[in-house]
Image (cartoon, rainbow, N blue to C red):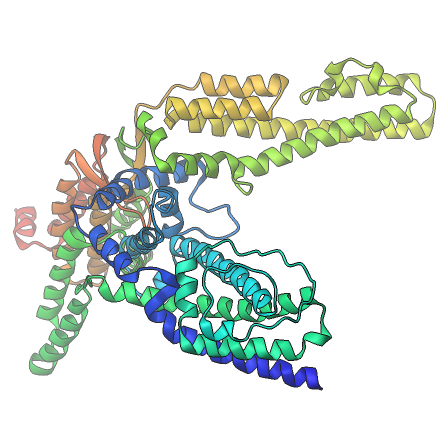
Length: 623
């Protein structure tokens, strides 16, 4: 009962200590110079900052290439234990490694989280900073470093106050007065070596901290007879250690908030147009009892927005206009099919198909030789070839498992047949020697009269044939993928593929893969579907909207139709913005050749609509 009371008393001291530390550390923050860190962070926001220019170059030039190549090679699905996001991509820059101080590391961590928000068109808030992988990497490392240092200091402090001969760099005078000899002849070995001394000194200079620690020490002295010296010291250290750990872990909010407050706010007022639209419709409906004119104005406004201002990186724009396009196309296809309007039905179907047809080609998305010096290169190699859950590694594991099983089963069946495996040539245990193993066992079947052994041998032949087919399929898949990788890879990357094949395969399988890599010519360009280019995607959305309005028999259909035609003309320009994925900047590329699907569809739909609706054309038909 006495020990429980003492434990409760120690717990109350612990809570007092945590409460005080939380208020005190908001300004002190572990001895970090927060003002200096914030000043460094502000400098990074300036276009003249060297670090800003470096990061901006990596983000605008290397990040889109890395993500495009990764998606092209192995798909967009992340084969990792956790789903990756923009912050994970930016970790490849490794901004913390070249920082010279904790203040600089903190500033860089927050600055990269700022870019994470910017690239995802999200507001830069506290929760985003706290969720940033780079910020967490800094905070967790510094937190553990400080907690360990404070724990070691607390242990030496306890030992010193209990009578051990310890030379601490700083001990408050109030605590020195509590020193007593209760350890006797116990020889204590100090553990604190001066790390994080500035932060610890600031902590220990606070009167409330000293008072709380004094109470803890006094309570520990009262229970000294219950423990041996070593246990007494460690229990006292543990109390202070837990208090500091809980304290520091709770300060992540404070750090994030301070940096969010000094970051210039970027406002996006595009959403206000929806309020304006609603206001115009309500006013016009109330005054004139119809919505024809406001509807035309809204459609015209959205046509301009889709053609000029739509943000392909924006989650909201992508969701809104993706849903609009999908609903418009599906409705148009089924409506014109039901109404037996074959021309409009065909245009609707072709518009949907056009989205996924290769419509332009560019050399700019082939892996340049200079990419091997990019920080994203090693990340790409890791994700394509080395990540344990990647397609290549999972297939390699399947290959090794099947080959090893084949050789083990072969050894086992020979042992059962009374044959010494080591008397055979090495060619029988080569990874690709399935046929040789099958032929050898078939010969054994002919020579044996033992029914049980014959069954074992036949079973081996059956399953070995299946294993051979499985491995052949795996190797064929490796050949296919390696050709795909090599076709767009730089010479450095092709060499990396060859090194991978050399280290992971043997015999004929290795030779086949090396030949697949070396014999694959580099692509002259990469072809991309219509939806990957900004103007082409905008044109398809506008064509879809026009088809939908035609189905509703609205004369306003001509507005998005004219917009689609204008935007389709822009697809003829040699420089186009290519969409890679959400959270990654678009890339401006030079087009080698293109097929103007959207321009043809716009002309076809425009001609048909005018033919069906324009009075001048109808009069000419009568003549």
